[in-house]
Length: 609
Image (cartoon, rainbow, N blue to C red; front, top):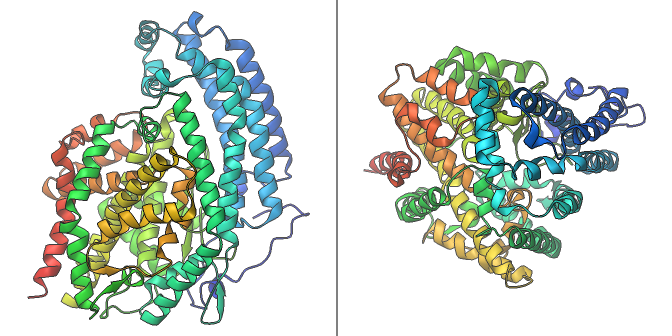
């Protein structure tokens, strides 16, 4: 990767930072597909173009949207998409560089400077949605009907116009646009605080990612030590995390009040193009299933571990009969690629460049953003996947998951900037489906009952983490935002809210150590994307129903599946699922997905006899 001469990047030994385990040659991002370097002339060229293009767009269209004919409206959309593309490319590059090394001051400054410039340059565009939402429905419907190419964009405009009842005055909207940078600063404070935390376990200093990874170690004493160390460090920093959450939640409350949002969650439902009652049906179905899912499974696990009581550090513990085998990178790549190819060779073909062309950054390194993600960048580039690969079997599933996102993003790119992006509820479809394909392929190769049991238990745990845990997170957020509306929350107040959902979702098998009440502090979604978390449960339930349909009616399924991914954000979830005979607005739909998890637990219980 080309870097500016003034910036000397520290050199990390990827295998050493992963605990000295030989994981093979771990790939690193090549961001030069976006820009050669932060000080490259192309960055300045695009920033200058963006400033001029935004000013000219406002000059040409402000106050005139209602006078455009269909060809003129289509030309305006294409100009707007070009602006989105150039701005998105700059921010993707700045953001991805920052996530590679969040503790580096130069990268943080470059990201912040780009953010401020783009916020300033795009201020003239604020009129666009405001004016659009003042147009009559009949006028717009007439334009969309007049030109099929223009009509293609109707779903994007429907989503913009869903905000019509919540729109403020033009002056106020301009003010809020400019103030957006302030909210971003609180997110960066959270990211930098998390990335800068250091933990010491058994005399070894490690990052949050490596410490959390110890919670899946076979050695119980090591898991316990990691849990206590996480609690200690979170406790020392809890005031900072509480300040971030209080500020973000208050900012949201003010925004929601001014916009007359009926609930703290409503803006997320609008952004997700999903009806509040559908989310409520999902939430209620999962909570009602806690006893049949998590409570039942963890009681089984308690017996397997030979414990009287489970502690929180046992939640993700491997089973006693599970090997602590490390999966090298080459094996992980082959496992996922074979599973994808087994479903359809086209899927493996789309996934291959991620491995070959520097689209994956895999190693766990000091200062790197924790967790994993797939970032779509812009439709005329390609996605990038971030992992913190430590060689655990679960890391293979994470690779399958993020690669699923990547495949989805590549396929949806054909829709263009305005329609490629899927609502979060549907954004998890391909990722969870990719995981399921990989799991099923691995399960089919299980050499005996013991191995099958370990794999089934691992999958059940992942599904509980995706469905039960995320709905518990959603309930925590609902309680947090509701409580914040009554005034400032102390760290202790937030701790109590956290514990109220943990005991309910995990069940009677668990005791909770002192300090666990602070574990809300490190969850990034609460800060970056309030109420994002239910999308995971939505995606898992949807995929389980889809996979059941694939098993029941495999004929022609692949083509329908690819069509669904190619649609990006151009269709509502009802229209996307119709070809499969599925409907997420039917409350019984969610029971279908949950019954797959129940079936796996049934099989595990039967193995006990």
